[in-house]
Amino acid sequence: MARNCDVVVIGGGQAGLAAGYFLRRAGLEFAILDAQSEPGGAWRHMWQSLRLFSPAEHSPLPGWPMPRQPGVDYPGREHVVEYLARYEQRYALPVHRPVDVTGVHHADDHLAVRTDQDEWRARMVISATGTWRAPYIPSYPGQDEFTGRQLHTISYRGPEQFRGHRVVIVGGGNSAAQILAEVSAVAHTLWVTHRPPRFMPDDVDGRVLFDVASRREAARRSGTGDTDGVAALGDIVMTDIVREARERGVLHAQPMFTHLTRNSMAWSAGSECPVDDIIWCTGFRPALQHLRPLVLRRHNGTVPTDGTRAVQQPRLHLLGYGDWTGTASATLIGAGRTARTTVTDITQQLSASRIASF
Image (cartoon, rainbow, N blue to C red; front, side, top):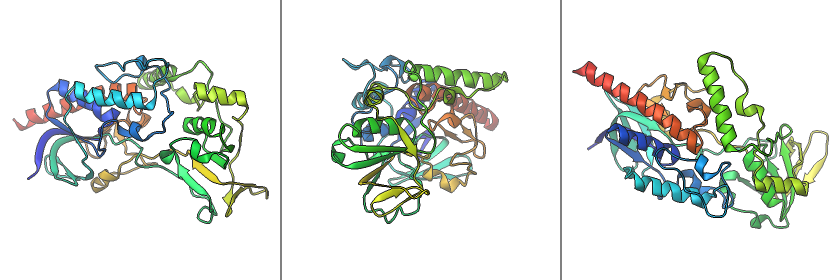
């Protein structure tokens, strides 16, 4: 027999917990379905040395600021995981795990959320699965013939496995710069990017980035014009480890290779460089496989939304995937602010439907 509730949240990471906080305050009956076996969302799987771009006090979920991590300005991965675990306990959020959602289906007056265990009937669904389960690796000629090791950011755990190797770091974002900084201390590295990397000023961190993104969104909504927002500042935040790598002179990128051979990367001009390992820091796509039964139109991997509400299915909201689902919604503080708006919208939708059916 199906289980019934007002709202099902799919995903128990930072966006799902933020939604749960406001759903609890709104007095709605809800459940959070999380595929992970333990709290922490995607943060559980990131590399050991990863740190936030902002101090703890500027990285809160709603209701409870993140405590400072003793001795450091920017909290590390384990500190964030502990914070998320304590957060769901603090607010007694109804997280069910591990539950793998296999599909969300249309129904007459609800959405049917089918899982590997049972089925939920929900008047509204919030999809908050993030991107970590959908890593992206581009395709290049010779990739299948390359005999060295290839791994994506999702599989990177630390630099020691690359000691003494010839390692290529692919990508021009924050992950690439941080991993390059680590691996270059123990291996021979080469950094390749599609365009020259753009470094942000040393005094820019997550606090500035969120403020800039918020001002851009406010300007867009008011019709006073648009700017490039965060993109105008650059792509790479100069964390301590990246600045240290700059001092060692390793932050110099080469143009992207055009193809691979059995043991090297090569360029169209004919030059080659021997390679043992390739680390693809090439990003992620929204993890939306569970929404396939709804047959929603997509553009560049996203679903058309009005705010966070899916245009083609108003019972569905998408939260935490990036700016297309709310300004900086893939960050801790941005997820919380977007979740507030999402739950307000859901509450109004449910109230209107109750009045209409009275």
